[in-house]
Image (cartoon, rainbow, N blue to C red; front, side, top):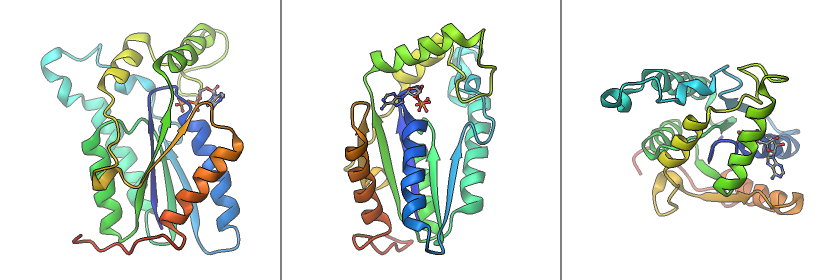
Length: 210
Ligand code: ADP
């Protein structure tokens, strides 16, 4: 069963949509033998600081070790459960196209489909969410919680580094999109189309050498 790669700007609503998708799929798979998994930075206790390049010297930034380690943990967590009977939702930034390609190949290796769910949100809206979290951090949310904000420079840099999914590429397709304003009915329609593409009648047969 498939791998669903969620992607979007930091604080754009990815976890919110990932949970909605999880609940939707839980309904569709309740009476079947499929297992459902939600893997995220939060589920693996990966802090936002791993993406922060501020502490990394400019000439070694492409080798940011903490982010590489985080990706290795996420990759391991996906690989452990991904199979033809398991649906895995990977909730995260997933902003590097080479990384999405790697995940797509991993799914292909176990002969299961993958798809991308992009969470569309204007940078201004997402920045407001992060700012609100920064404002109340001192009072309420300790680091490591789902409400953990990104430091402003880290947030700006992630938006700058974000590599948009391209549905013309194998690894970013099929590509589904939900925007902030989409209501429950629209989200349900998108989840239904996603289900059909990866698990329903529209599912393509996956061959490792394709
Ligand atoms: P991310 O996982 O991208 O960091 P979250 O899903 O944690 O973002 O969402 C950030 C905040 O925005 C949360 O407080 C959430 O309740 C709110 N939020 C997310 N998506 C929406 C939406 N579509 N409409 C209204 N509020 C939303």
